[in-house]
Image 1 (cartoon, rainbow, N blue to C red):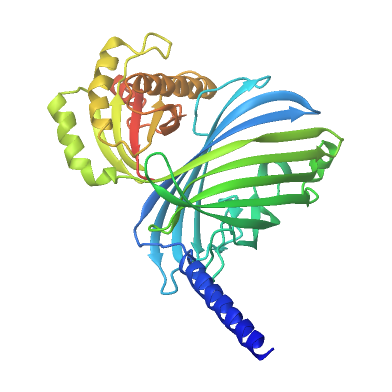
Image 2: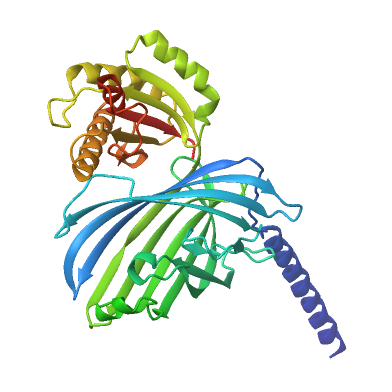
Length: 414
């Protein structure tokens, strides 16, 4: 019996030693995940949402929504929290019973917020963007492949136009995280992969405007999100992500709305075009292009084609203007990581509505030609029309009107 007891103790000792070695090995593979902010870092997030919209279970339309976000880390606190200044823009293209449109700049928001190294937000209640906050959030402890955890987050919804609610309506959720380990992609890049999911349920607050109560309004909203995040451990940031989602809204009159689809997003650094102002100005001068100016503004570096020529009462470019754009395209291609914004402007003639529509169509015409030249793909060039709202000269003279009839191409920094 004594020998058996000794043998048993030896077996236990070996077992615990092996277990300790295994645990040590497992612990060595564990990682602490944190956001690593650096002052003056700038990056862009471009998300593409493909969405189907159903009304009473009948397909109403398909939409492609582009969200463009630029972020500037203006400061980093001693505890590692980063101060973010962000610009958000949205554009969409719809098909189906809702009339189609080209990729246009629809809405624009600016936000300032703090985010700590674990992912938690500190943001004033007056800001409407970003919509999803406190996600991802990482635990302070090291985690290893297969580990799971939960963290609270929330969505912020802009209901000003629909319900006259002046501040974002916040909808809390609990997100469920799992670390799936490292993954090497086809291009050789290695990422840490996480899956995240959460459910939504909320009752819409009673509209503040009594007149709205006489019309149908969303009463109950439910939904879910399932995401896969690809994390760059060296940079301490999300590199890209994918999402499946579904939102169901029941209106006060019983109408059922369903929105379901997928999202893909990429996060990239970009070049500061303003640093090259003199260089671009010299290139334009060397090309001897008439009525073409280069200026700097808060969005980036703008190349303005004044007195741009279209066929009469149309948005069809004259051949002379195509030749200008061909030469300018060579300059634009030197900024592969920067998006472009093409804006149209008119002189003061006709109605406000007709001017606005003509400016939009002319911006689209110039953008489409740049697309045909391979300057950008459709996800990195945007259009916007201003009509006669931003003149650069007097509309009382023919020379002034000619200058105001222009298309501007901005290499976006913000």
